[in-house]
Length: 587
Ligand code: C2E
Ligand code: MG
Ligand code: MG
Image 1 (spheres, rainbow, N blue to C red):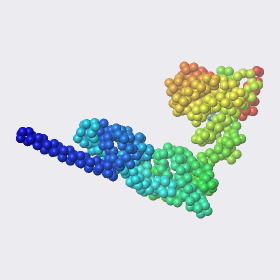
Image 2 (cartoon, protein in one colour):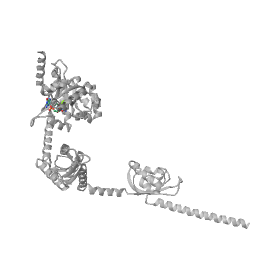
Image 3 (cartoon, rainbow, N blue to C red):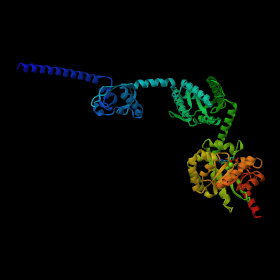
Image 4 (cartoon, helix red, strand yellow):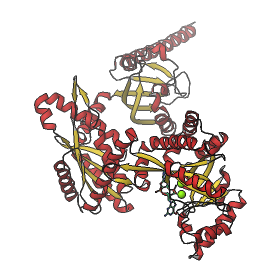
């Protein structure tokens, strides 16, 4: 009996002990739970599969998710979508291998807001999936980071225009000069001053003045390549550094584009404002050895541009300036001429059958009779037109004029007559070339079989795939295709085979000395053999003498073109030439 009581007492004491331990455990749990809940720091408990088990209210507040909404959610789903692939894998690896991770995360809240947190993640000693394996502590640093970034931005960018400020510009300029030095390339420094900005500022007020600076800055930035840096130097002055200048002409075009980007008026607070700029250009190496000298020279060049009547550029190097100004002035005249085409006409140069001496076709060549300059050679103005879209309207105009004139003219002639027209690579890069040709043929009623288009080797090689597609399209329309100036480009037989060509024109450079230079003679003979094996007709260009003619005819060249037969003629003279030939043939 006493034994029973003793054992009951012991049991009671042990139960009491257990109860006390449980109570203590419970109160510890309650305490931890209340710390967890009342903590101002966002905390999440996550299992070994990285699924969320519990979050505290601070975490809810930060993410906008309630606990029951994200329970068993993968914790990495909280990382901003666009950053997840980059940010999460190193976190997971570090947790699995080292048991902790600390760093900056970009997260996305329930409403899609992006916030940044400094995260501390610690692993706990358990593998039970229902138990917390990791504790995530987040500290919201969005605001702090934004302030830091704003400060950083402010120290590098101009407050009004948001362009790089002088500080940042100087860094980029120096590094561009360094790279240039290593690569052996050229870097240009441009000094840009707005013309008459002070008057606008004084009459319309600073607010409009500032807006104008902002808008001008946007246009400058859009005009320049990504490699260039433009900065606000002071007031209404900007500086730009252009690394990796290809050649003088490339630089002239960029400079000209800067002038042109201000041509459209600015609309600011219902005011239409016109402004232009003056640009001074200097180049390293050549125009100065250090930043200070280069800057001084670009500034003085800009003042020369202002003295020249503003809305102008001036290159510090005199030779370069003369060349660039001449190109710009020709481009201006050309642009005017292309508006009406009154100053242009087409001449036709007969292409003659070498066996019979009979004229079989003619090459259409454009002529520009400029009111100020007199006759300008296409070798001078076509490259300028090719630098912008002018070549597209010129090309279409020549095509249409030649088709119309030759159609009118060939009404009287019995035999089918072909006209050959030059295409430039820019026209080729336009994907609708076959459509344009088709349109012209329809408008003029010209027979596609009577049209031959001359293209150069370079043109084909530059756009190999597109060229092939387009040439096949043109071919399918019935148009013939010639390769012009053959021998001056890549001259690869393999390439030639790929293209649906009909005719090959031997460049006049080889023909010129064909009877005196053994190398040229061998070259011409080789081209003829090759063309024959490819089944191409051959036209010898630049035939000036009977010797040229005889040499080529002997070697089996089919057709000849050159001053020996006739110079390029206006349509009326061409008509007379054809009549004379007809008369000679009949008599
Ligand atoms: P091209 O297509 O090779 O044209 C032949 C050039 O050689 C023409 O010069 C022609 O006048 C010249 N020529 C003809 N026979 C002789 C000769 O016996 N001796 C010499 N020394 N030259 C001769 P042009 O008209 O000055 O044209 C020069 C280049 O300008 C053309 O070379 C062509 O590439 C381009 N071109 C002319 N008209 C047009 C056009 O309408 N569109 C395009 N895209 N380019 C054109
Ligand atoms: Mg040609
Ligand atoms: Mg040619």
